[in-house]
Amino acid sequence: MKFSIASALIILGAAASVSATSQRPSGVSIIGSTATSRHNKRKAFRTPASRVALRKTRNDALLSGNASGSSEESVLSLRAGSAEESANDGSGLMQTLKVGFYFGLWYALNIIYNILNKKLLNVVPAPLTVGSLQLLVGSLYSMILWATTIRAAPKLTADGKIVVSKVGFYHCAGQLLSMMSLGAGPVSFTHIVKALEPFFSAAVSVVVFGKRMKPQVYASLIPVVGGVSYACLKELSFSWLAFWSAMGSNLAFALRAVVSKSAMTPSTGENITPTNLFGLVTISSFLFSIPICIVGEGKSFPGLWAAAVGEESGTSTLEMVRAIIVSGLFHYLNNEVMYLALGNVHPVTLAVGNTLKRVFIILASVIVFKNPVSPQAAIGSAVGIGGVLVYSLTKQHYEKLEAKEA
Image (cartoon, rainbow, N blue to C red):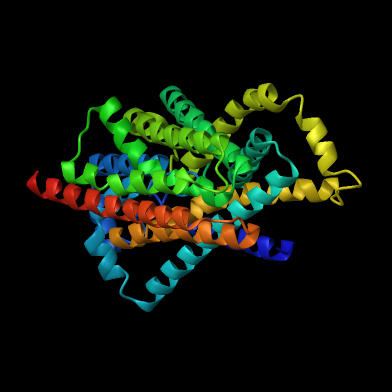
């Protein structure tokens, strides 16, 4: 892939993110902002109490989302309340074009990030260090936006710092474990296992919150677990390290969602928009990753780096640094553009979009890296990923019924 294509996508992602930021009032989140009419915005922000409640709900939804682009159920729940407004506003041609642009850019950034990531790890098999450096790139990107006043800089209270550090820890764990899985096995295999994320979210909700869902919702997880298990049973590229790392990533992201929902309060600080929160969490994650990298790869990384940029490899130091920066930007911008896309669609469209995204990543990785996929793995993947869609829609349905009964 030519670097010019990657550069163009990064510029598009940054432009979309900055443009959306400049068009929003301070304190209004990405999620749902463009899908609500001006009249409804004024109505929703009429009282201080409603402003606090809405901002807290949206911030929780942002932090509950997966940095890799999944864990869509929290955003589904948020979008359910404004489905009617979204459908009305989305009838225009410009709205349709904007949604199409966001989804296309989100898919492109996500797919290319996974491919670039795997190529980078093939050259430098140091997932902990590479993942940490990607978090550093995202941290610097956020700080540059704050320093240049493109975005209003956030100010955390003492409670806010504790919240961000907790969420940052689990975000760090999820990101580094995902990197380990991608480094140990094919991209397709990692995303097959990560299709189990809804199962972990449901389990953590019961264990930590004591929150139980309808039996029908739990039943919809059966094809997810069964499909993924069947796909992994005789996977040609099966790796225990890749499997358990992806499973650990699922658990870490589920715990991140729990911590963010239970700990987030209106007293977090000033200018706490979703994009600013994600920037703060990224910075916290990077700080947590430093000792992990030193302990895990501190001795081996210099040798791995020297081999990657040696004369025999044909890759210069500048090219490697550029590759890490580009992958870090793709990782960060992918998450921001994802929320721009998800904030403009009906919940059903959102669920379908997230499911298709994972399918596209798997297909793209198989085409690029030519990893063999057995018929059993293909069937199991289809059943598991289809089960994720069924779970999302079933959960959405019963949450709407409960809201009406309440």
